[in-house]
Image 1: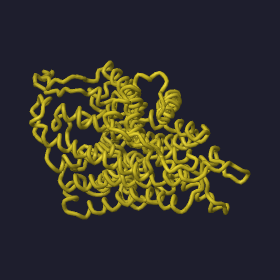
Image 2: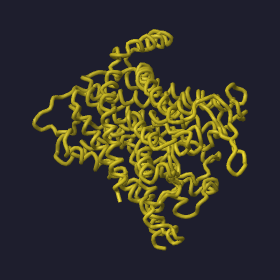
Image 3: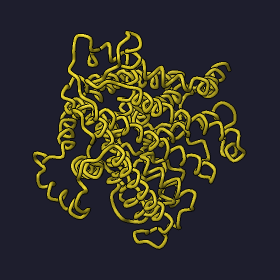
Length: 566
């Protein structure tokens, strides 16, 4: 059954490792704030930004100053994205004459793109002008991704520092992540996607004449450039409503494979950056191994579920060996669609190449669970690593309780403050998801958006809140979410799911940075071997899933039992 999936998965992981290792070492140099070999010319551009920002913009910051700068920058970004949408009818580069976007949709979209969620309750090619897509949305794709990388750098410095009050400078980290990492990679991937047939122009629609003698309007735009940063930044917002299932965004099997690599590339590379920056590459490899083990298991479960044919279709004469091809593109098949679904929900990326709403109940549950784990299985750019490191803190705390020792990770004692902040990080998103879901299924405005009654409708709402609070952005697509109720509810979940997690993470970074880094001794628990990998993976699964067992039982589990009971 896995004969066509295992080779694809193996090649994917091999290519990811070969590309992620050198990128990780490179990003460690970027985090050093020193000149980057081979890109010294970029340093002149970097200096221009600092000169324009004024004296003192590069000074080291405490975690509170770092957090304040981060929140202020992203708040201004949200206002800017909102303003462009509300005024797009009067702005240039609007060949289709798109009207101004409504206030609640603009609010939702602005928060969504700033929070690196890219939830889209609208059809991109019918709602957003070229300027809005290219400047407001794609521009924020860079900034939200750079914000995640900056927070990861700050937390790593907290572990690596030897009694320091500073964790870096947000403006420097943001600038360097954009100039040295995101921008060059985006250019390379955009050129590749354009070579494969992804559209890149500033034209309006093109009228095509079909074989049935009808006329079809085909929208155009700067798609390849947005596609690149959409994937590399684990943003996920597609230029077209069909996202990566659209042939102008994802033309063939090769582009599909490269898109999956792009989603995981920086998250995987940051694991090696972590190892290099703390002075022990084994630590980064242990984190990467944990992510890989969890991801392989999830990907295999998704494929196994989708390889089964819906019994309702089998009763109509569909071959039972054909698998569940409903909602999938034939150019990708079940293997390419299942792997993409696992990749995009393991990462904080809402890009999809198939309709998750058409997956089998358990096939749709696995992507949902990957989001509910906190998206730490590779996860979003930066957010996956700092989320996994918070679970590592929890894992060593649990181990310390079992053996009666003070918990310690990478030479830093884990105290009460770190555990309080770690608890906030882990509990904020489940609270947002479960409380938000409860409100939606009780409120009349929430129930009005559910097109499918019963367990599947509940799964659609649960998936939407899981996607929003964990900053993923994908959807089951059966939920009518472009309403004032859902636009507001999901925006709140996205904002606090992003920044309600980032602030405690920065607090942990500041607390750890101020502590002396102790040398390892005979009683120190090794955190680089298979035993720790197993402990960390078990902590992620147990803590992550236990929060959601009742909700999952009411949704995909009940739907699966109902489907196969017929």
